[in-house]
Length: 284
Ligand SMILES: Nc1ncnc2c1ncn2[C@@H]1O[C@H](COP(=O)(O)OP(=O)(O)OP(=O)(O)O)[C@@H](O)[C@H]1O
Ligand SMILES: [Mg+2]
Image (cartoon, rainbow, N blue to C red):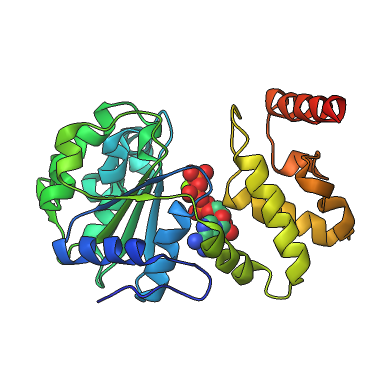
């Protein structure tokens, strides 16, 4: 079982190496990187390339580890027991009917090997990764209500993504293989764009990429635009039929790019850009 990239996803050599290392070690792959650098998509693409179903768990600030294992629906059971006189009450007697299986339970008991994505693990509180240590390490957990041990028949291929909003505990890190998706260089970015816009004109692509990296490299930006923002912006440039001349500035001057709202996402960054353009015009 090896991942060699896919038609819709551009994976660099080191990323493929990391995915295959996690497969070999049978450890979760922890993927970090700027927002929009393809962390979530990686799990989807690897699962598809290896022909595995993907179970997804999108973590929120309120998510608890237990929800990924199972939840006992006591309220429904109580309600059913009150109605039991009417329809016999067989359902109520069997506690299994009130165990709601979480994604980990589903992944561990799946008939075929599956991939499991725990997306944005850093959104939950610090207890969350700590509470999953044993489950991810041993791939088993105990259900107290039904008194059964849920153990993975085949270890799922686990992807964990993080945007670095919180530090992850060392004990958690020890159990993962780590990969940081670096921001794509211009060549990789060209390949990514080619996947999404195969018929984009060469000169428009060159001018747009230059503008994009100029914006990104501007010192002091609060939020640098990333791959997904560049793709949105290109889509708009094509849809609005923006002439090439607007993107090409004379003698390497900076100019505010058209449809800048696709690239810069807060007013300070736009103001910084405007200031730069203003200073340039005064120095002329
Ligand atoms: N290597 C790549 N190949 C092809 N498309 C990519 C690649 N990287 C990013 N993209 C594009 O960028 C979009 C955003 O990717 P994705 O949602 O996976 O980012 P993310 O890293 O999970 O971001 P966030 O941290 O905000 O969740 C994808 O829908 C895809 O269109
Ligand atoms: Mg994501």
